[in-house]
Amino acid sequence: MKIRNVAILTTVLILAVFIGSSAVLAQGGCEVPGDLRVIVTEAKWEFDLKTCRLSGEATVRNICDSDVIAPGISVGIFGIEGQMVNNVAQRGTEPRLAPGKSVKVKFHIDLKEAPASLMFMPFEGMVST
Figure 1 (cartoon, one colour):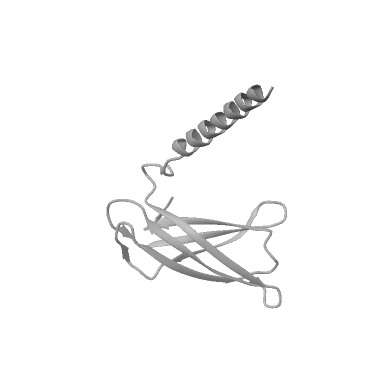
Figure 2 (cartoon, helix red, strand yellow):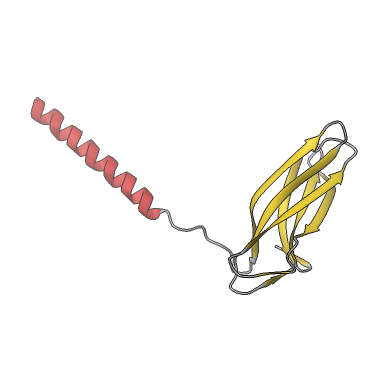
């Protein structure tokens, strides 16, 4: 009886180690579409109920192998019914961003009502990604 319990326990432990290690090995780097040149790596925002001002900051990173021109963010502002009610686009302080470098982009906009949700999108030059 003890031998059977030890054999079952050993089998379960080996199986758990195998499943855990295969899950770790299956995880690789995040895939990036080939035509994507800039990404938002961080975003934070706050909404002041007294002034109806939405303000925030996002970090845009160059993930391609050449400089990007005029990187920035576009923030979509959505109402309670899920439709975009407003947006704001803001470029970063760097006119050119070298490969692997990041820039923080600050924004603010005065609204008529509180936003239900936001969507952050990076862009470069005149093209959004």
